[in-house]
Image (cartoon, rainbow, N blue to C red):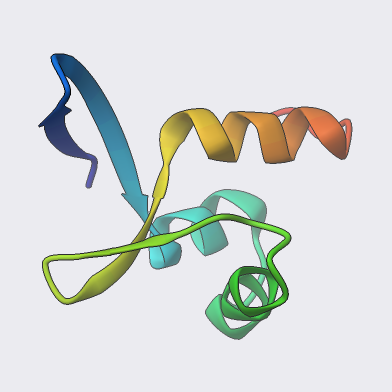
Length: 67
């Protein structure tokens, strides 16, 4: 479930960590570890950590993964 947020006149899309885990076929704990280590930037929105879709795309391209 993407969350759309209007910030400084720009619409940003955010993804839940659970969604990222499902897309990458890894455990959610793995995604949380990436967030804790700073490998994947995340933001606390609506009491849940979320990742900007654009940050996720950069994360994927840096690892040469295609979704």
